[in-house]
Length: 472
Image 1 (cartoon, helix red, strand yellow):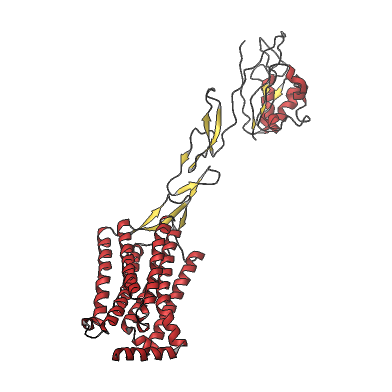
Image 2 (cartoon, rainbow, N blue to C red; image 1 turned 135 degrees about the vertical axis):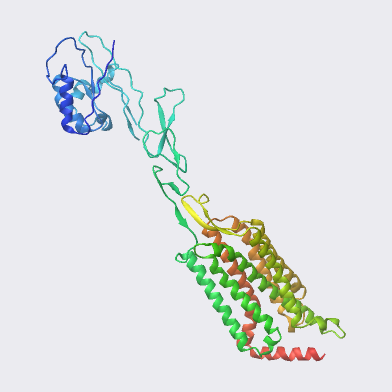
């Protein structure tokens, strides 16, 4: 037995369907239906196209000549419409399953064309066309996956792995998108990645900027109150110049938050950590100097104490200068050896390009933080040891609590910072800046503001106690 085939293409033109039907019914290239000249094999069956309208057009003509016809469309419709395929149902009735080899269909969440029909020839011998091994087509977003132990033309359709796409049908493997693009939801096209950074016009950036500005204005207000009441006993007893410098450094700490908001640039990345570190070191140096001053002032009140020569503004200035220069040296070596720079992180977040500042040297960054925590611990230790000094010098209690808040914030900052990405990493650092600075402001100055504005009688009493202790 010899099996041949003819393939025709209608180029999606319905008119050509009739020309194809005439060609199938004619013996030669000329369209002469019903004319048989010479030896011509019988055509066992005709397979229609994907479109149901094309199948109907062919069926209209070929059913007159008793040619069995099967269409992809008939499978797709589940052989449910007998009015469109009357001759198919005449040749292949419901009980056709008893005629072995006449039709084989497999139906699936998608339809699949598997079989084809054949009929008896003139001699009465039954023969069957070989079974097709074609599978459904793998649409874009999928790739072919060979079935183990099956012929090469049998395959499954596997969805593209995450981060890859296929934009054609029946591809053997999916492709990765360019670095600045990512797959769309259906994984059949690469689309540009979004640009992300902590911007002023988004709720998170706007909220942090508002908080930083509000705390800055509040600190400036406290500074104004202290300058207005600078001759009152409580302010005079707490080293006015040192207090003013501490408040100014706290304003700078709040304002440095703005350098972390907005799209990072070259100068922003170069200076923001340096300004932040030195502003905080200045504030902590002032706190440490106040703590040392409190302890020495109490020790100097004892008769014959040699500490009297150390009590004064010069000691505070040297403490602040020495502590601040250490942090300045760490930041300077950071900028010289490995300065921060703006960077595009294309891989940390799916579908996003993170515009960030690359700190370049993680070791230098944590050295800066480590020195700040060291300053805070030193201030806390001295203040804690001096917490039980007489009430005239009870500022050590507030310093102890403020340093405890400061250390708690920055110790919890490290794991939070390392566990976030993109703009949320920046937001964590800004929040730590605001929280720790607010702790310094509230713990050190809220009690004094309360006394200055609401308890002037206590203010006078403190001055009296200080004079009495000095005389004794």
